[in-house]
Length: 588
DNA sequence: GAGTTTGAAACT
DNA sequence: CAGTTTCAAACTC
Image (cartoon, rainbow, N blue to C red; front, side, top):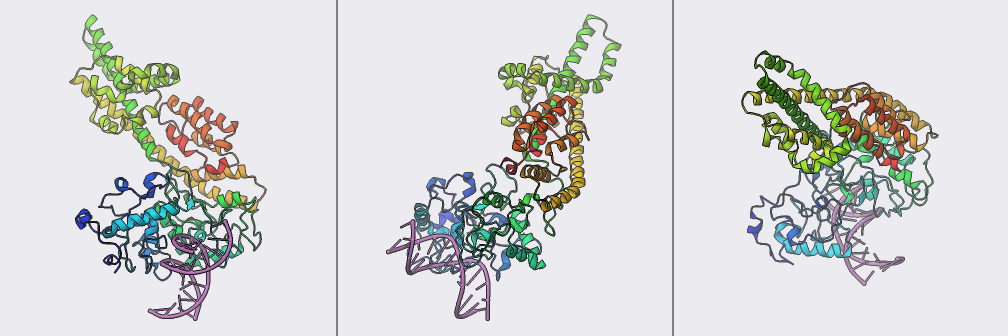
């Protein structure tokens, strides 16, 4: 009876027609906290920012009400199939669902199918609702922001480690019941908490007992964690959906590999606080690491071996490079053709042409790569020339000469930012392309099409092969990683740096030794480069060295540099940099 | 399902 | 800002 009932206080000042098309009161999110990219929700969705009346239904999984852990209503998450079934339904009676008491409201979504009484948290009472939002924000500007600080912004990674921003204040629950927001969010209590008798810390016997106690229950939690990970319950700001931690179950089933030195510190105030806090509070094992070999004993869930290998930007970059290669092929072929024509003009026009033509394919690819290597090796020149030519990069090729449909398709998304970022040498290549003669349509174009496609497809095939290789490497490394993690767990002496590199490698699914970067090299030697070496190497050396942070000793950098000289790279440049990136853990 | 406990949110 | 009240979820029986 929630929605309908609105009479008493606020009139339905929102005309129904304004929401008419709103397919329904499909649970929709009024406050899209994530849309702000983590920015503070400083305004209660002023009119203009307010989602259109037709609030898009939230994906079930991301619905604000993450889950209703309500034991009775375990409905939200069917643990059997790991599919979030439906949003949680609140039962508010006195708050009109316009206070943070209401989970729906707190989550920034409309009540939909709830069991609330006198609900105003619906489109029919938008005005009242908005007012309430404003009031709430006035009281606490962060009211609708995630309570759990999590992974860095901007990344979609599945890091669910977190820390309650405000911390809990539990007194009696030991922070081991869902009364505790930290526990409910599946995070450890942190130094932010002011709880008493906290048992929700790393190494807590009670906590471990809880997780190890009932196997079924445990599995349910694992499943929930899986759900959280799969459904993206971990947004850029921690929770993608509900700002209120209440519903989320997430990550923490993973009794980490964390700092064994943080043991039970006592039963008094939050033991997490103090010096040990950082390591302990920050150490929760990211769900990202739930790979078979990555989690603690008895707690793991399936994770694709290819997970994290390919990121969206990698695909873009791949496309960029394919375009680049294609353009280069065009250029080379064109030049050759021109040369040939010229030659033919000057002399006889017979056999020479055909023989030239025949040798094109192979020779050309070699030329392409060579040319690109040259381009890349002279980056400074590229920089100088690129500005004026930036408008005529590979994407512009069609202007002067046709590109194959396949290439064009690849370029569809390319031309803006990514393109220029992806390949520093594009400018020079473009320059070369630009200066090359116009390609006559017809026979020449056909040949170029064919060649472009051949090269592009070849590169793409190589890329796929490399992905497969990565998967295989991950597979083989996982087991050893598991072993090493266990050893680390047992050996408190292993320093954090070492552990960090191990874990970083772990996340990458790459072999874990004390030198994560060394693994990169180890891997790289197993395969050849997908893209022109210089292209890969130059960026890889920079990015990898840069991103390895603390874990990247000169050793790591040297290894990457090794890539350049050996022109081996397991993956395209971006993949190199991204995949071997060492995450925050290392930085700390 | 009713009643109790709990802790966050709201209020003073 | 501390103390109190209100509230709804979590929990128990």
